[in-house]
Length: 126
Image (tube, rainbow, N blue to C red):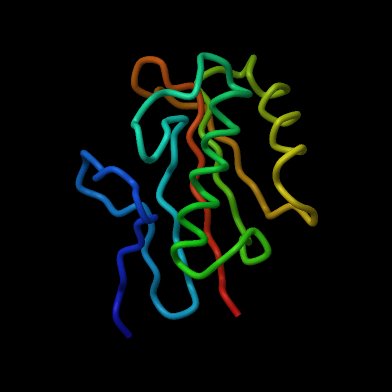
């Protein structure tokens, strides 16, 4: 079974050695997405809420390009730069991620300057 790189149509090339998504069989792994527009490369804003909205939109674009949707997502890993952002992240996340919520892990990390949140997703497609 081959691994297939998944890139949303119109997305700018990724400037790092990775694919936005990889599909193998019925499994789709979405690489960590940050709060930058996939087409323009512009940062969505300087708040966790604004960046989380963009991150989740980016994930949705990769899922769609790989033949999946939020209904297929079983796990999300969230990377935050500051524990003080946890409440703002959760409020935005609860607005945009459909129920039942996927399993989730939240980890606190350092990200490049200006980036406040990164999220990756694992989807199993029926």
